[in-house]
Length: 278
Image (cartoon, rainbow, N blue to C red):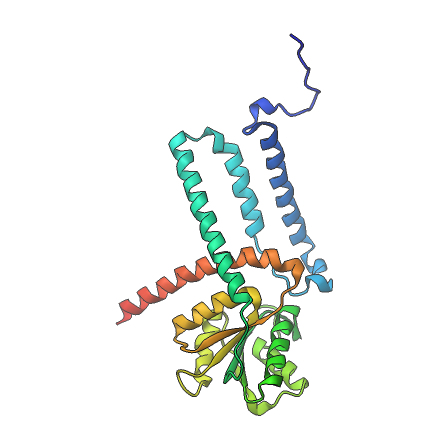
């Protein structure tokens, strides 16, 4: 029988979980991890390009790559019952992911009703005193809405974070006023650091509990924002969607799934703490 000699230095696929395909997949994960590591090293330079301005890289992709590598290494060594449990959990996670992503897309495409009493513009990171692309899109969406609905007031909401010389709310106030927006129709909330705090603290400016409110944020963020608003106590709330850079859309969509899961956990904690404090 003819035997084929393996070239010197070539991988022995017989001893690699998943064979040749497993070898290729594993190295793809390593390449992904290397890319994320290198990106973090040159992040400050990459952000100088307008296309990436306002982008917020996260360790999600690095973590995902590590999990896939680990599964590729040990997956074939698991007992059948354990492998079945893992696959069941993966399928449940996949269905949950598709459900949440579908809701995000549905809410992102909804149109805001006319003549809302208030708009709440959620803050986003600024650089020093400079508005980033993400935040500018929200502010421009609010301005476009208020030009058509001249009685609508704007509440800008956002505290001061790291590497920010002023609060996000103050940066937004300056941006709006520089473009001729009336000070009389503007409210400033500059203490919040999360979406939950944005909406909770902004409620103080509403004249009545059932005031009609539009939450201005980027399209991928609308679903979570409205969900949080309803838990805070808003009775008449809708979304006013601002655009998102197409190049960042897949990253934001994947990240938002985990943000929704995190918010679900936080909401349960808040309810539990509320019951204990009574």
